[in-house]
Length: 192
Image (cartoon, rainbow, N blue to C red; front, side, top):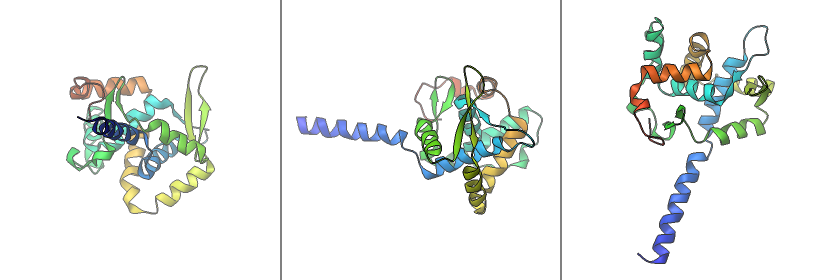
């Protein structure tokens, strides 16, 4: 292979790798909706604690079949949610297996984008951690999003997550690993 061919192949690999980290409007809206759902709890300055918890909740938000299994494990009727088959989950929304379970490489850019636009803020949880909370501007954007019915399923699932899975990131990780051995058996970086 010529030097030009090798360089072109390397450039395609670099471009594909960068694409993983690029925030999408849909991904940002989904995370904003999830963070806002956990921020809106009566009488408190609530927030969603940490990236690990965010990733595990986002896993259930993206994979409704898996959420139905988790709800069943808690004795909740999973028929309360509309489920899509895993084949119906768009390929650009698939998560990968990472160190602590399901993960999306674009979280850093998505969170940075939401913070930079003033839609969420970072809050101190304790001396070692942080959480995320929607700002008034972010909450107003969520209200506008919810005027579009295509977001209603995400809102319903987010509310179910807050009601039944407002656990620590570590407890959510253990739950996912216990319910879905296919995830623990997969290799790092493998699509889920």
